[in-house]
Amino acid sequence: MSTDLKELEKRMQTAVESLKKEFAGLRTGRASVNLLDPVMVEAYGQRMPLNQVGTVSAPEPRLLTVNVWDKGLVVSTAKAIREAGLGLNPAPDGQMIRVPIPELTAERRNELAKLAHKYAEQGRVAVRNVRRDGMDALKKAEKDHKISQDEHRQRADEVQKLTDRYVKLVDETLAHKEKEIKTV
View 1 (spheres, rainbow, N blue to C red):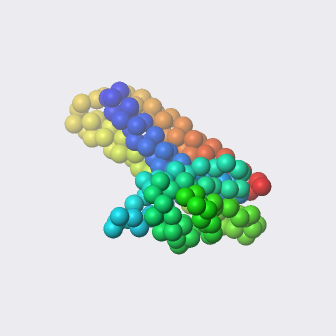
View 2: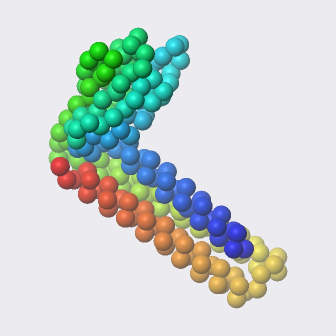
View 3: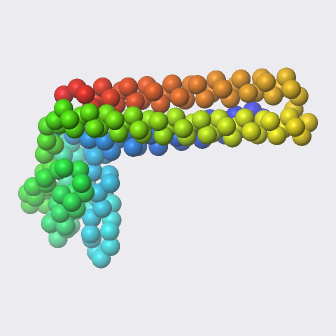
């Protein structure tokens, strides 16, 4: 059963990692190279992730640059960034595209905070679903007489402590992201 606990912990960790990826895509007032992760570029007759056609960097807090490897893809890359729904206006400059990050309005900050809360709740639900699976497995093991009632109780406590730890981690991650969104 100790391996089952490790499996549950791995699944909870995956839920938290997924939440962190969602948060990375949320635009704060600062430039983050992860901001352009969802951008897909029309290149070589197919749609490709931006990181497969160029290098994204954040040389300044309010500026991203994309160094496009193939000069012929600069225009389609800039178009893809503009049409990605991120509210960004890229400016091609030779093989480099400058992407200034506009100041966030108070209204937009509140929208982003609400979205962060929604993502965090999905993360909590994912962690609780893993807990439920673990508890169900324990009930079944006790019913099938593979573990005793005491052992069931002890392992259920371990699963609950693990769940509490990961829910707390989700809350801390949310608090950090919210602070990042609300501060300039």
